[in-house]
Figure 1 (cartoon, one colour):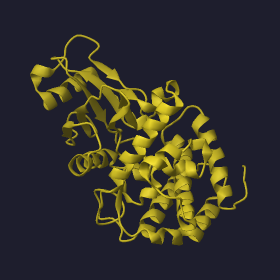
Figure 2: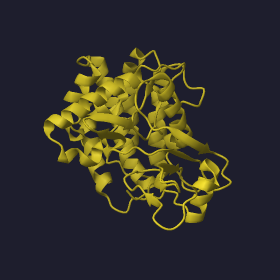
Figure 3: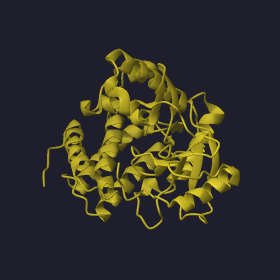
Length: 330
């Protein structure tokens, strides 16, 4: 996926990074030792073959001159913190981090090397699987996601910041930042910004039920799940995690909008009971948050086609209708 946030580096810079991480004896020569992994949406990632044949992955954060959305600032620091938490406090499989560098003296951004996972990407191969196989993986994903959500924190919000005492304060700030990002770029949502803010205010009392900060992966879609031989062998891409409400996880989104798939197997694996009326209101706020990001990020990423923008605008009309709001098209 093409995006202006991808911070590609020259081969000599990649070699310098390898030297720092693994030593000069592991610097490859010849051709074909660095291959860009193209399915990511934000960071650039390379599959690197070291001199001894070991394969690793290098991720590089966006360049500092590219403006990102507010919630994406410091995303690589968040990912590294999440990987540490999952490794230390859960049995959820994640790649091993070999080396991280935030000095910015070899390139203009953070980067880290991690274990390469020799497996299939669920999001890429899912259409080649039988319905029973997809259900098996989605159920396992629900179980893994539940385990992630058992990790608790001391405040709501970013992993590396003081945070908020209440989930209402945290989430209303989060979604307010997204709307401000859209207004700053004059992104046309098809709905009035003030009307969306009023809708959020009318439903924010539903957030008060959430009193314990839990680790929320949030971006746990099929494309971030690596599978092999009938099981999940790794979960990747953790840069959007935060302390919040587990009901915000991606696997619950289809409860609101069928366009996001079928949540039945995920819910079975997660073990979540039927949602209460208050939980449904809260869940709709989370779907609203997601769809707003999907619309607004197309401007920040410099997308050259309107496919995602158009699709996400249609989803915004649908989620607004769940709140009883009329359709606006401009």
